[in-house]
Image (cartoon, rainbow, N blue to C red; front, side):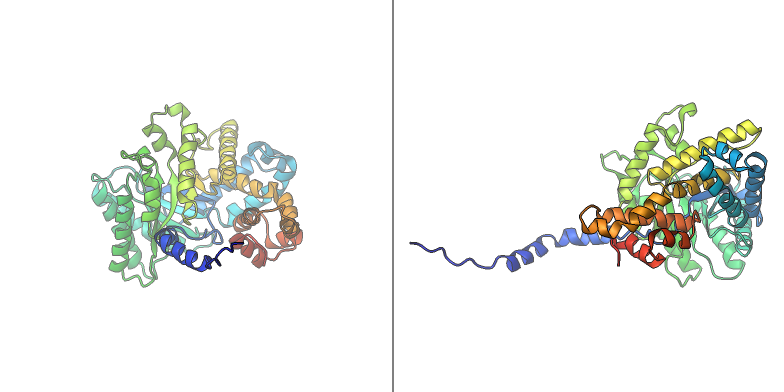
Length: 426
């Protein structure tokens, strides 16, 4: 009878070998991807206001105009239900929430626009408008109802507009510095991006301006990239520059924003069919979604240019379209979008609040039973994170309060934050 030789322990040696083999891949993964920052509030929209039309009272006036439209065309729950494609019960819940939001915080994220909404003007004129806009923003931020987040959209870093973009940023920040007080966190929207090199350049721009104005807090300036040209999705070499852009952001890049009309025109879609729900737009946004997954960079959908203005029928038709598109974006994981007209705030908040209230009861019931179901192998940690994220985003935007969620789920806000982060209950 022969005996087999005693086997040598394999696991310690093999584990060490794998550590060495995978060290480079591990380092790249750690450097390029980070936990989802979903615990911090993401605005539900960005309101774009042309620089020459922005003043200290602009945000208050936007809220007032949206409220006036609501009172004229959708003052009762029945009218509200028709205007925003809602059922009677949901309309009853959402109407007072929208009215309160428009009265207290109509704009969550403001972008003062020096690009398409502003046009091309003389250097002296744009410099003057940049300085005036900065002073107006400073004044608006001390008022009740000012936008919690704000910034500007400069022109692109393409050769023809590169120096103009720098001059506008410089004039804007200079006027802020002259007005006294600490520079707030500002976001710069970079349009017409075609390469990761432009993202790298934007990092340099932010660093230099922070240094020039003696900002003691690192990364006081951040930026977002507009995805509005096909070269960003598919390069001449067959690669996806958009993914390279995300990783070139070095922590300053906060978001990718889809540009509906520039992108649609660039790929040859006729004006009558340019829309957020065009299949070509869906493709571009799906690529954006994959590019940012696991990086902490956030997504924003684009705009619709159907303004709620004119007769009752014209306003209601525009509201219904906008509300449908906002709901569609939310269902597809785009929790932010652009608004270009004050009355769009009404449809933005109506659709957003309705989205989070519609499935509130079922999400809470499922989350209440989550621990038992997970223990029985019927729930994945990813499901717990998704449920907690849904409820957390609804809390962030004001669709419901913490007390209501706690009553329905038995979970305190701290439990919900833990579940959003880890996919399990503490």
